[in-house]
Structures are given as structure tokens and as C-alpha cells.
Amino acid sequence: MNKPSDSMQNVDHMDGRELLPLSPRALTQDQGDQTGPQSPEQSSAGQKRSPADYRGLWKKAIHQQILLIRMEKENQRLEASRDELHIRKMKLDYQEVCSCSKELQALWDRKLSSPCRTKVQWNKEEIHSAVCQGVPKSRRGEVWLLLSQQHRLRQRLPHRQQPPETPFQDLLKQLTAQQHAILVDLGRTFPTHQYFSAQLGAGQLSLYNLLKAYSLLDTEVGYCQGISFVAGLLLLHMSEEQSFDTLKFLMYDLGIRRQYRPDMISLQIQMYQLSRLLHDYHRNLYSHLDEHEICPSLYAAPWFLTLFASQFPLGFVARIFDLLFVQGTEVIFKVALCLLSSHEGEILECDSFESIVDYLKSTIPTLTHSQMEEIITKAIEMDISKQLQAYEVEYHVLQDELSDAPPLSEDSDRLDKLEKANTQLRKQNMDLLEKLQAARLKIQTLESSVESFLSRESKMKHLIRSLEQEKASYQKTIERMRNSLPSDTTAEVEMTQLKSSTNGKAKAACNKP
Image 1 (cartoon, rainbow, N blue to C red):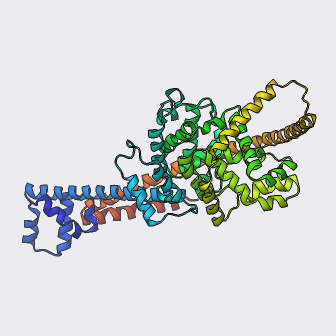
Image 2 (tube, rainbow, N blue to C red):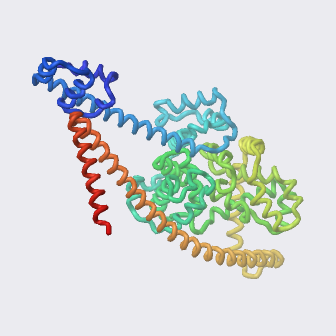
Image 3 (cartoon, one colour):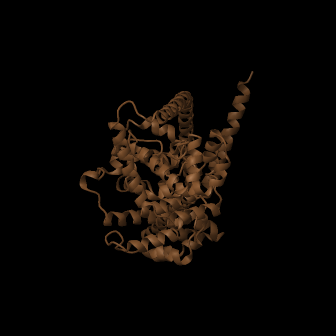
């Protein structure tokens, strides 16, 4: 009897037909075909096999089938690995700002491989210095997770301010009232990026899951349009569950969720703080914008609500996120101030409301690589934490004074100016609402058409796959049956098929008038 080890050693020398589970009879026939003509004595002796011989042949066939199954599984694993690498490459398809040296990459590799990184606090200044030097794009998601874990070790939120502990997968099973708003914004989030551009592709589905889960977790905020860009950038560097945990960190631990609340008081405070920074650091630019009645909310609100992700290059935004994890929301003000100061001369040359707003919204985001690096470097060196705290206190004091002031103010010129600005903003708001309603109607119509096409396409693809699988199954079955039949029987079957085909054609010809 052949041993299993002997049969496995012979796998490399087997005929292609032997890679299928064969019966001992078929193997006997194949071996007879390969050895050539035999004498009657050899033929009669060769047909007499013992049970042990047959068991050996069966073991040989079984080992071959096991090998085939293992090869098929390995091919599937390699294919899945190739797909994963392709998606990862697609996600990180952006130009990196402040690239890392080999020494810096080695430093991050050591930190990310440390077994105690989630339990022991590291030196804050050392981490801050490493982030300021740069973060490797390929490991940026891991670095962000590490920075969030270190922040929580140093500064834990009070229990009443912490988010609910509902697992991500449990939230996905629930329904959200924000579903329509989220679906509408999927196509508007990074529309030119390959990962998110496919209608209801892998990127949009992951983004939908993340936004849906957060809207159910944080019922006060729910969903706000700017959140989709923050969530999208996280998904480019992490898995869905990692992105969900990091989004909770940004919203709760760093306090970004305050600017998304329905009253948006925090956003109003931020716009006041930015205006005061311009007043104190760039008086000429502030006076020029004030002269044309351009307040920060007209151009800087999207910068804060999307953390610059809606208008600026991804590499630049990713670098801002690096600093955000170690410096907090202060970095948003520093980058905004650096952007405005670096374009101060060009803004001062604009002499109308429309030209200034157009420059702020369209020209500033088109930064060169050197400009992005310069702005990041300036933002790192700047320290405005004390000023921001003072401006916030100043805002609240002014609000208290306005609420306590009599209805008739002595500063009538200022009131007239504010009323004029308010009227203009209301008119713009009404115009935008009308455009928004028309756009929503058009979007709903397009969505229904797209859903119909996608449904039909999915059904057709499913049917095609089923037919292809069925065809392949039939072909394999036929091939196995042919290989298991003796050669003379195969010839008889082919002759029978040929005769039946000829008779069928003759009958069909006779039946024709």
C-alpha cells in the first residue's frame, strides 16, 4: 500500500487530469493508456488489484483534492490581500505635506510597536515635537489613535460629559431620523476623490455607516453637514470602528461638537475670536474687510465646520489634523490667521465686496506645496491660547451688556449698520433657501432614478453570477465524468451524441414544409 507521504511527493509529477478526485478504475485505465500496448498476460495480471492497492489509489485521489482545496483558499486569500492593498493605495492618494525622514519614520515605528502605549503616559513634549516634525502617511491613522489614547490618559473627561458607550455595531442596527440628510450629502463629500466618488460604493457606504452611528450616539447634535468631511478624512486613514472611536474623541474630548449644536453659539464665538485676532495682529486687513462689511462668518465658517477639509488639499488638511490631536482646536485659528496673513497683499488689492469674497473662497484654497509647508510651520510656532481665552470672555461680557442695555441705544449709527447687515443677510438667506429647495427637488428625482438603475443593475449582476457559477459547475461535472470513463466508452458516447444530433437535424428538415 502506498504511504501518504509517498503520494504527496508525487504531486508535482502528476498529469493535469490527476488533479481531480478520480476512481481507482479510472486511474487503472489511465495508467494502462500511458504504458502503451501490453501482452495478454500483462493485461490480465494488471487488472488483478488487491484491496490494499485500491485503498492506496483512493488515498492518492483524496490527497490531490485536499491540495486543490488548499490552493483555492490560498488564491482567495491572495486576491483579498490584493484588493485590500488597492483600496489602501486609493485612500492615501494625496500629496503629503512635510514628508518624514527615515529617522522620524523609525521613531514612529518604535512608538507604535511599544506594548505599553495605551497604558503609560509618554512625555508630552516629546510627542509634540515628533508630530511637529511630521507623521508618515502610511501610518497616520495609527498615529492618530495613539495620540487620542495618550490624551485620554492625561486628561479624562468627567463621567457626565463622556459619550454613551453604545457599541458601533449595535448603532448600525438602528434607524436614524437623519438618514435623508446623510444620503444627500454622501455625493457632496470629497466628490473628486476616487474612494468616495463611486455612487454608493465602498467609500460612501462606510461614510454612511459612520455618520449614521454618530447621529444615533449624539442625539443633541445628530447630523450636521460639516461632520461628513471630518468623518471622511478619518475613513481615509482608518477602519470604520477606529474612525468612529476617533470621531468621538474629536467631538467630545476636544470639544468640537459644540460648534455643531443647533444654536451654534460656539461657532459665533469662534467667528468673534477670529475677527479680534485680525484686529490685533493685522489691522490693515481687518479694516479693509470691515470697510466692505465682510465678517468672518462669510468665508471662515466652512473652515471651522469642516476643519478645512471641504476646500483645501487633503495633504494640507491631514497635516492640520496631526496638529489638532496635540494642540486642540487652537490650531484651527492659527491656520486661519496664517492663511489670511499670507494673502494680505492680494486681499487689499481687491476693491469690492464680490471680488474679496471670491478671492477668499476660491483663490486661497489653491495653495502651492511650498505655501502649505510655510503655513504649517508658522502655525506650529504661533501661540495664541491666552488671546483666545480673553476674547471668549470679552464676547460673553458684550452679550451680557447687550441683553441689559435699554431698547434705544445711543449708538444709532452702529445699530443702523447692524440692521442693514442683518437685512442683507436675510435676503441672501432667502435666496439660498430657494436655491436649496430647488436643488433638493432635483436631487430627490435623481436619487429615485439612481436607486432604480442600481436595483436593476444589482439584479442583473446577481443573475449573471448565478448563471456563470452554474455553467462552471456543469463544465466541471462533465469533465469529471469524462475523465472517470474508460476511453472506449468515451468514444461510444461521442458517437451516440453525433448520431442523435444528425437524426435531430434530419427530423427538423423533414418537418419543414
